[in-house]
Length: 229
Length: 229
DNA sequence: CGAATAGTGTCTTTGAGACAGTATAAA
DNA sequence: TTTATACTGTCTCAAAGACACTATTCG
Image 1 (cartoon, rainbow over the protein chains, first blue to last red):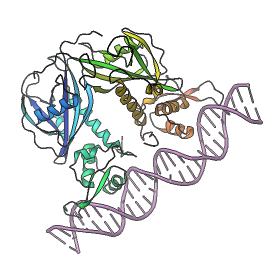
Image 2: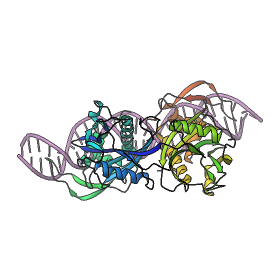
Image 3: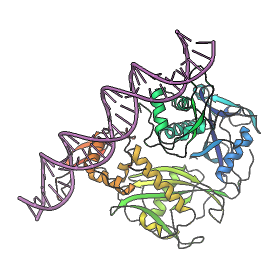
Image 4: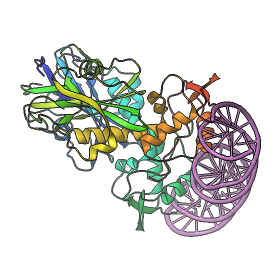
């Protein structure tokens, strides 16, 4: 089983997604060093010898994005390892998607010039470092698909939320609009999706909405399909 | 961006699935060396410095399973990297699922004592090496799930096949039985799933079945859901 | 002819989507 | 009151599932 291993390095890259200002945002860091100096990139870092992949992802989240593991859903997406994707060395990168509810502005971490949230619509204009555009696109598509048949949408929301907020998650992540009435019925009648609370949110110009929290289920049966695929 | 990289090695593990004798089978190799000498394991190997992950998977398929890339669908599943999953060194393993139509018996490859197909039902009795039981379970669940909303089932069949054979894929992978009439209608009326041919299969005791080949589509809309989830 | 497999017709039920209508708050 | 948002009712249509029926082969 001998094989060459010299100079193969393993990293994690994070696709941190949140909803802010009614848009899906991703956390990017501006590179301080070559290659791609000045370009925006996904936060990432090499794994340590005695560290599980998930733990490495949480560490990068804390170090480079100054976001604690509090209230983020972390999930492996895919591993990217094409030779020369990083010009310095052979880097195998395990992509992790981190989803959270209205996450705070990041502080600038180590080895980065800047760090901030980017609405995904604005990313068409800029070139991401390495193959990170592909990694990001793959992750967003994964998130979009998983909204259909899992309860993943609640990870974008705080502990307590209204049906309208939940609908907003679907609308902003999918980039569609949904019928409020039909969505309400679907969300409340899908077993395990939501747990009804006895309280209501402060009214925002209309009838106050009932509050819900995440239900015990993880899969949506039947699924909540996007309209035109 | 300095970090310790010594002794972190990257491998690919293959979950090769096929249908033989009306059962879902997985290809396993018997280990010739410690650790887990004599135990059955997924075929795998370390990646080479200038080799893409997919290419490494195809190489292992040829070397250790003596199966060419002919007629297999290869797809990345997930990466496993818990420290000490391999007692010799830190090994990060990218799992790939390979699906093919009634694949031949493997020849014994390098560094393995034996190689053969195992019906997945028989694997409850034996202990797989390393964390390969978890890797296998994860892959089978992925395959089962993807039958629902993609045209993946056709990768288990030869170029030309009948609706009954296609139904058999679903039944054997899911471990269920499906109504033949309803399945026929669903398969033939789902756009892009199948391409109708002008020929029929040799009869097997009844009316000869029309032959189909894979259609141009990759996703099934609406999906073909398992009944009780 | 019967037996076996392929394929279609039809009925019922479930659920999605369109959209109207009701409920409850603030100004 | 109007306005805004939350929710419910109802109708239509698409599709799943149960299951009976027809079609085409072999013995």
